[in-house]
Length: 226
Image (spheres, rainbow, N blue to C red):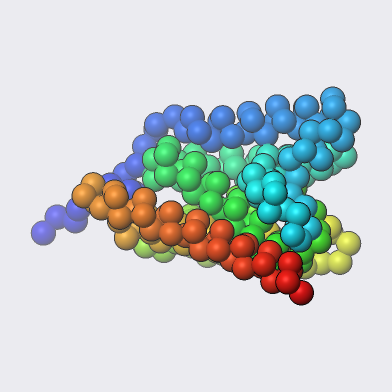
């Protein structure tokens, strides 16, 4: 019996232009330029400060922090955009544009929630939480499709270890949170690939977001009453 090809695998290999990836890269670069031109104004307006309970009044920062980078470090935005350039197109072609942007944003949210839960009082900025979400999603998809994940595991492992090294000033919490959120979304995508499961897919992704929001709300309430 001939072996049927996975639609997801076929799309991963297709030549469709990854417009969302290019837009995300362009948006990050433009915002970085605005950061440099505005002094500290843009950076202060968009970064995430896990300062309980005040962040409850500016929840959008749990997403916008992923679009600003350290103004004094070209390496910060350079490495993040390189990772997005390498992994974004393959994932976008595989899951589709709408699902890809949802994956990216939910991963960014997961990174912010992890920071809020584990190290409240710190400030974070940068796309690495969202990037780790893409890595987590790519790992889950590759495993499901029977692809080789050894190299990807090495990349993820090295980047996680770097976050634990003293003096690196890297938020490993955001990395882990983004990784788990991205992997969770990818798992949902794989389990709801049929067209008649689209509503179920949306509901399950929304449920992941709801869980992240609920965890944030519980942390804020605990900080308020203690």
